[in-house]
Image (cartoon, rainbow, N blue to C red; front, top):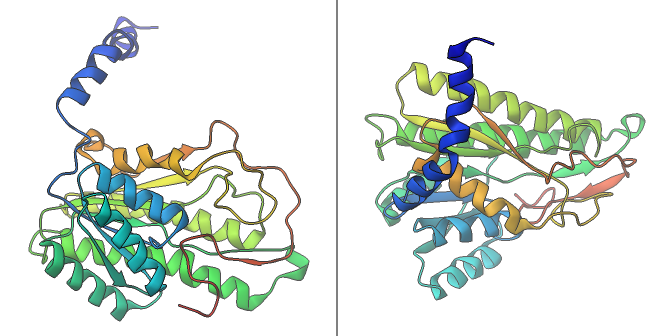
Length: 283
């Protein structure tokens, strides 16, 4: 191994603890003064992410089709002293995105963070594939994420109505080999979309970072998943990717799975919507 390579490898190890303390003391995870929009934020994983962003100082928009639950979630955040509002958003509808982003900027004075969390899982064997279920997952998981990135770019890029750059966090899954071929395909598409979007933003000078979270098995999932993780386990990860602590991180995928990886269980036929997302036909 060359002397240069040894230096490159050893330096982070030698400085790790001091650097971490420096990062924390500099407030790199502080999101004060920033506005965040979380899709599927009314409940489950989305609500937990919104709470984490609010705790870090961000003003938060709960974006969801479930109005009563979404308003209740925003009200609960306000009770903690956070700045939070509810905006109705159907992630599969382009015009709904335009309205939601416009309302966010009007209410909070900008848009700095978008968390594309909304998703649907409909499991089943390939031999029993339901075309309607697959179309639903493609609409919510893939189109919904693509529209999130589109409208984040349009708002955050230079000359946009927010225009200060920012961060987009998408949500895929470590379970790309179980839970049904359709679900796995849509979450794999989110991964590819994230990486291409990050490259595009960099080439065009948008100053927008795009990264992807890979939640592991936990109580928010549907199908044959044991409760191995908690929704709170993702809180630190989403704050990190949204903050200046990750200012040089883009196009990356971050597994939050306790090194457990996909759960190797047989897929179960049937439909389910992950908490925080609209059930089929309601968006």
